[in-house]
Length: 336
Image (cartoon, rainbow, N blue to C red; front, side, top):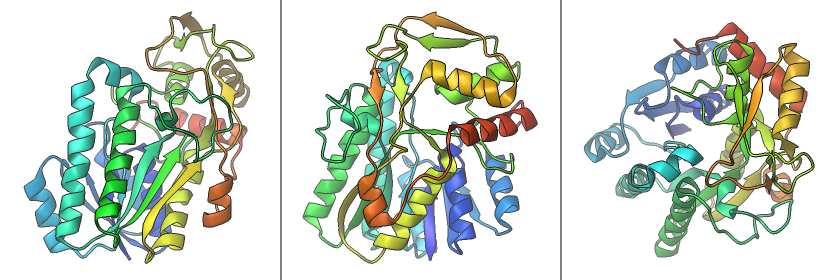
């Protein structure tokens, strides 16, 4: 099978490319490299021992997309490409709506023009907003609380409307929770450009001495220690979920929605302690005001993914922290 991976040079995309290649699939990656590095794809090929094809293309560049689809007969698309920082989305919402939604529409129109109607979409637990209870199942109401989450939710609705208009489509919506960790080789991992927006790369950059201290956004939430609780999932487990989706659902039609998470929540302070234990490094942190758009608690019920995809997480919090530290300590400046 030939798979197009949008945003494939990024954190989750690169780990998914490893799994696809090791699964015997042919991979073509497009990425605008706005928050990623082509070096990650070179390392993906080293890890897997197989080649992939890369094109620097932005999804807003429709003509380049059309040319790519004319040159390749894809069996499916895995769609990661998009801006993804909650806090930033509150500050520059129009950029998020333009990039994430318009880019996806361009992609889907191009797919339809070339009769490629299988897509796995990288959605997010942010589509649930602030749930009334946890764990969260796929049947929970959706109500995103920030522009980033709303772009994910709007795209989900667009894809559902697309299927309703043409039942030949096979659409998988993967709502995943908080990816952390890195490949066990230490060759690829999370390498945000500029100041990290996510917790784990911020912790690891403090540990390696790249940053002075971690800002903890709020300690007055209704959680055991007052800090936000999230479901952290190892990025390799998450990547395997994408391959499982293709294995189980390719050739079928419909809209299929799955939570991908561990079913266990950890607070920010618990994550700091876990990382300190594994790395032997002290993590300096400072409590600051809450971040706009954040919620108190969020973790998954992934029973449906286990039942229908035969997928579950295998890697625990210690392995998540150990793999993150291996990546960061071996690559203190990321891919540079």
